[in-house]
Image (tube, rainbow, N blue to C red):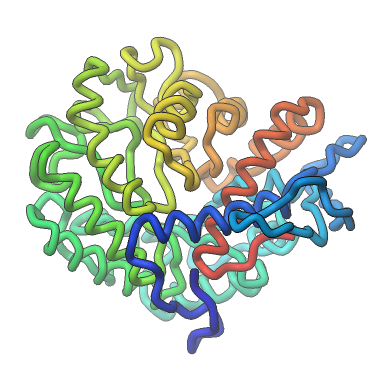
Length: 403
């Protein structure tokens, strides 16, 4: 956990437990507290239009609510459903200033944060001005994410790491590069990195060749684990991607629908070890793949499969952090539905954050998620569960959760 204030007015980094089991215990405490705060989200009557946000409601102590130590947790207020839905959404925008509508959504709790791209960050002064404005609007509670894998995949082009993952073949090199990158991002006000790539490239024809660490299923997991630790040491959340693995894919899901024909055994032995290693290091986020894996689910792509995200990632691998989709505007997603329906399917399957890389997608997604939650108690419960995981992530980063 991190507390205190840095020189920019944001939560300062303090040392965290290096032992994975200890970190999991700390995360469990945070998750329990977060779940108590969002428990019982009100499913009020009325339409709750996309710009309507209801205020906080005082609530009594729920029976049996206790944290990981057995102590009773007494929540002071519960999130409105409008705010709970907002906690699931990562937004984007064009230009080098955060538009008024982005700042309003952050103030009103209709978005958890943003993803920034190179178009938003031409230089350090501009980027810092943007991240400052986002945190002011969100009251210090904005998730600010970017893609900073290394090499050519750097949304903050002037920041480390200069080396791509594919040129790294040792854990110490992976740790050094990841640490340098995370430290640079933290200095610019970015708190989530959508890296490392945890996929294991199957060969030169793999879509992640050059982006994934150089090695095989026996050597890549140690590098992924090292990168996760390095991010954590710098106070930035790492994201292991793209679950359950894109190493055998020959095309990018951003561009077309992709089927990974690997057998269940091939996935278990070739793809999952890297994700297991990341989870053992208490990685805060895992990104779900938009590819179809028939040996795991014959009908639904991984990001929309409760079998992949629930049974495999949560159940078999024991992941307790937040699951974020790959870009909801990916062609592999749009080949199946519009972005609003895809967001519903993604949340229902087990994603906690919907990554919107299109500046107009919020207008389609937010009202549809809210309407579905208002009429479907089971979906509302899934939203509450996701909002609780996002609250735990924010606390881990020293951010102010919604409420």
